[in-house]
Image (cartoon, rainbow, N blue to C red; front, side, top):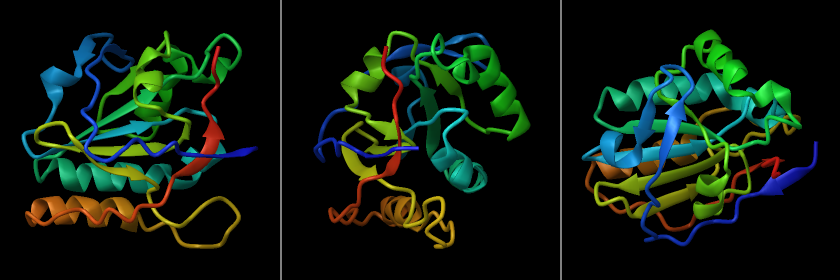
Length: 184
């Protein structure tokens, strides 16, 4: 498991629009369709990454809490499913059901969306404000597999709380660390 850090999309970048298949509903979903009037969290995840597995329960917990406050969460997997069959759309559906994902789990087969977001690893987190401008990109918290730090979700949660309170998000942000996206 080679650790790869986020590319850290510049703050203020406009979220690239996309239309992708939701592996849970088999429906096409676009960012323009489901974005939140408060803020939208976009997460690049995959099924087999130990870094994602390590924080998966906390991601679901945060999504449930903040979606109830008007935020939208969207997960995208861009891994090459030919070389990594555990990340196929069918397996994504099973993973989303097993972990009760309360958000769409979209498949980026062409990998164009991941490239547009400069995504580098799984997990990779982005928060876009009501105007779809990037206000946060980076890690969930300080915890990674094996570092013995608790999974708290504190970095992402602090950013979401600031948005709710109408305060600016602290621009001092740490990159996420995880498995590299499995490019074709």
